Length: 113
Length: 112
Image (cartoon, rainbow over all chains, first blue to last red; front, side):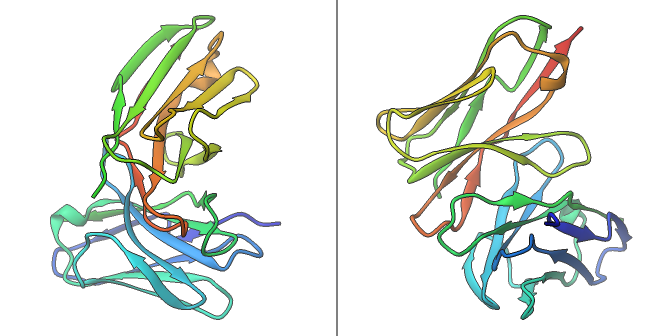
């Protein structure tokens, strides 16, 4: 059974650019959540996908968008990058929508210059 | 939005000592989780507590959920250097497993 994987591990982008981050959920899990963790802070919920549909969203602007594919892998897209978007982006998978337990990937460290 | 506070923010102790870290909110959570995160890695789930007053033990770690489901504590007995890390609590805002709210974490350093 493979765990949650994310790619790339590190990324440097320029302000105004767009970025796509990828996540493969743990085998058998159909729910994926994305979090942003700024330096020195706890993760903040961006949104959750369940069976390819957005299933809840935190307080993030529309330039943060996502997708979930039939194999339950997921993408996080961020348009018009801002300096404050620099953070560790974490993906977490859960067995299903109502599961309390979620398992995190190692994250993608995004730096916006 | 419900907020979680954690205390202390930083803690540095000697190996073998005991410690307790706290997670508090003014709001009720349907469940609460504790995670440990090491540098460059994602958080690793330690425990989920659901029932008010619930106590769970994981080897040297004891977790308690407050009776009113607004607060929780993590007690570590005889800390080891391998316990070093960022301890995060996270509360579920609903019963659907969505939108976990995380606290800012307690950064623990256990010195040899």
